[in-house]
Image (cartoon, rainbow, N blue to C red; front, side, top):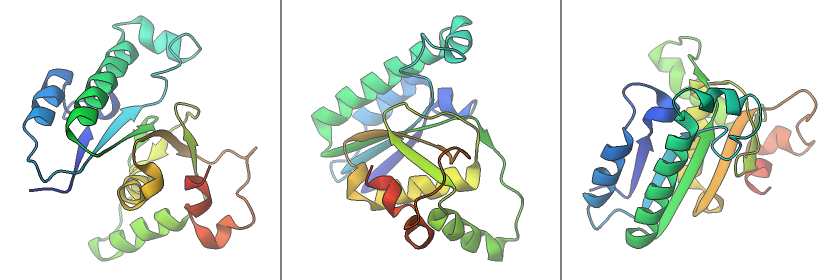
Length: 177
């Protein structure tokens, strides 16, 4: 039994991610003890009429399919689970290889790094390292601010420097937006 279920959608994570049909079946099969769904999606789902997302959606309707998956998952989660979250990321790029002893230190450093920006809905875009994405997902499972919310995550742009308080607070200020 799991308290939370993390679903990596095919649209966001590529082959190996859950296909839309499989997500519906997965949600129906969740044990009663499950309290929360965290769905990993992609940037642009709500911006299919704006560049560059309109071009990406033009060939095969990838973003329209992803939006339909999100809607199905939300409906199922609202019926059966007390909590849900949708985390939207851009293209995930491999993190630099680290030794296994330093990988947990690297993940916790990413979690406390103000180099990640969060915003409600589908407001951000940009490539992100898998380590930063993993740190955001861990924080999303820990934080009550992310329950019943949809948010996007991206590297902090140079035009939006971290708040002065963020240096010691890590992602704390980002969750309070």
